[in-house]
Image (cartoon, rainbow, N blue to C red; front, side, top):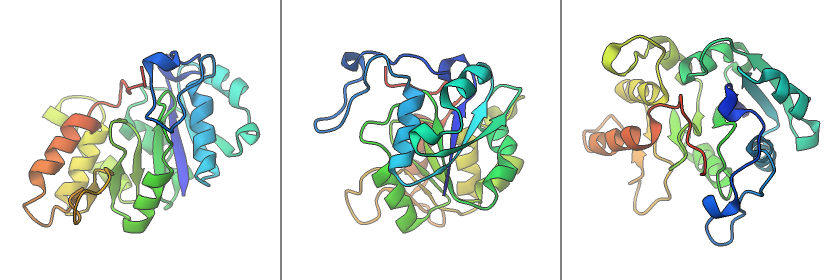
Length: 225
C-alpha cells in the first residue's frame, strides 16, 4: 500500500493552517494546530496508518516542499518526489506516478486537506472489501484505489467532453461503467448500503450523488477552512 500526496500548486505548499476555530474537529478527535503546515499532518497521519511509501506530486512551490519535507524520515515515511510541470489534475498526477505506483493499491491525499481522526478506519474498510475505488466522505481528493484506476486514467474522458484531463469524478464514473465497485466509504448504516455495485441498477442514484457531491473537481481541493 502506498500514498500519493497531491501537493502541486501554491495552495498545497507548506503553510500555516487556519485556526482551530475555523476547522473544528468532532469531539474526541484532534483539530489542526495553528502555525503547523497541513502537509506535515498529512504525512504524519499517513505514517500512523502504517503506510510508509509516500510519493509527493510536485508542481509550483516544489523547492519549498522538498526543503521542508526532505526524505520524510522526520515524519516516519519514505518520500519519493514526482515532478509535474502542468496543472496537478488527477489524471495527470496519476499518470506521472504510474511507474512508482506499479500494481500496488494506494490512497490519494491532497497536501492541504486535514481529515479529523485520520484515515485509518477508512483504510481498514478498503482492505476488508477492496473495491476498485473508495472515497473518504466530505474530503474531495482523498480516495483509495486498486490498480484498476490506471485503466480509467487512460480511458476516461472529462465531463462534458471538453479539453483537459479527467477529474476524479470522471475516473470513478469510468470504473463504475465497467461494472467495478466504487464505495462511498461512509460508515455503514445497514447491509451494504454504502457500497456501489454497478452490476445492479439499484445503486445508480447513490453513485451519481456521491460523485456529484464529493468527487468532482479536485483541481481546487477542499481544505478544512
